[in-house]
Length: 286
Image 1 (cartoon, rainbow, N blue to C red):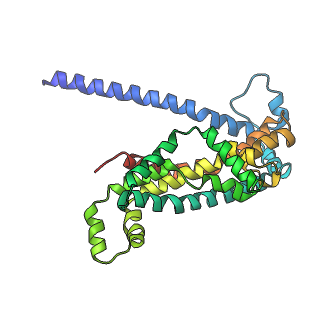
Image 2 (cartoon, rainbow, N blue to C red; image 1 turned 135 degrees about the horizontal axis):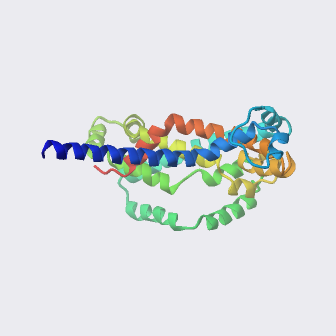
Image 3 (tube, helix red, strand yellow; image 1 turned 120 degrees about the vertical axis):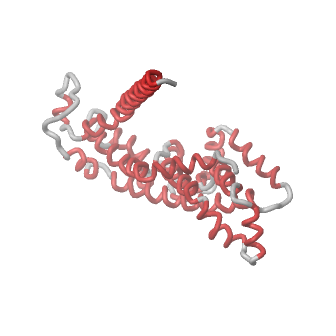
């Protein structure tokens, strides 16, 4: 390759890189624009918002009154607290279930293991609507509607997360397990001292994804709770819209949505690298 061809090749590479970055920048703006519009609307007064015949992309008179109204006119703090309890309890119980299950499928040998694991995977084929109906009937028969156990119990396990964690556990060499057993290490100690630290990125990813799932959960909490004292933030938004600010007070609604979505945005920004690495590890074998 002569110098002219080399320069042309470098120039083409730079042009392609510029085009790629430009496309990513445009795509990023399109993705982030709804969040910008949400925050912008939340700092506009109701009078300024309704007087805009043509929407404005900025405001010269921002106000925090909508955020004050979000906590004073409706029980947003209660919805927030309920969601924190539901999210933390559900995630903790789920991890207590899926970690031993994944360990058993990945490392232990017992009769019918493959058959049982195949049955677990087949459960992923069942539509969520059928599971919701079954769970609703069960929770109702147990008298657990409008209670935290009724909210939490149907979500304490996940076949997908068991499969994801099992695949990561299976990547750890068998020789390490055999050496630990020769030294007299129990299965529980091997799980907590070796396997969980090695697969820490995947475990953190599962925890974060479950937290996001619980925080955004809407259908099941809305179905099983009719008492406002047990509403989560997802159902609380609908309650706020119907009985709180009114359908027309969009700035106050946006302020409530900003408050509710802020924890998830911060969580993702802090752990985004671990989420990506944890998910990618699930697809690597060997």
